[in-house]
Length: 323
Image (tube, rainbow, N blue to C red; front, side, top):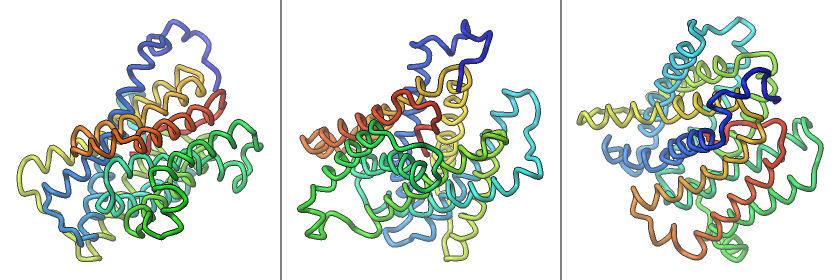
């Protein structure tokens, strides 16, 4: 994406502003796992109540979609309505980015620590590169991207305990690490699909309406599984609104940065995302021991370095965050 003519003096092109806005986006995205864990407590969702978790995910993303469309409409000064040609892309993106990804994500968050989940969750950045090169063939294989993926996956392998832990079978659980990796695979697929559809469709319309579609479907799935959602206190309402804003606010602000800056310049700041995720897990969830352990810090450094390497000079990029 080239910088548009006549916007060089726009405030969003100044690096301190761009960095500050990226920090806000990554802080929002990074707060997703702690917010979900807190929500499970406020809504009194039991350890085995997967159905109610899916209902919560559905409510969150329906609200996020409404907010995204509202924010986009205010920026464009017109109400954003999808074209008929947008319906299939919205359906495909809703299936991958919201239904598939967050069905597994909300299960994983309940069965994994915030720090561990935040670092594993970064695998979506590297899977997106792999899918883009080998599955969708949208990019040519490059040594830089290969090195970045290897470095990033090395960090994920480290937080899992290394090869020995994997071989022993004790590093992965189906509902924890397995579900998080499944969520990341769906995210990677959605990134590739968005890059295809965004060439001819408005990405804000696609994202907003796929959130709504996916959120409604998730809520229906959760209800059919026997789930429910009870707002016990006003805090439940405020937290749900915040959870919706995480996706809508961060996506909108990140989109503004991409509009006024070269994509590679913005995308490389995505390394802040796992950093903020781990820090907020330590601060909000009290997971200081794991976050600041040698293994935790080393894994975080490798994952962040991997994101920097794969995005350095990348001419096409997806949002750094997923939540």
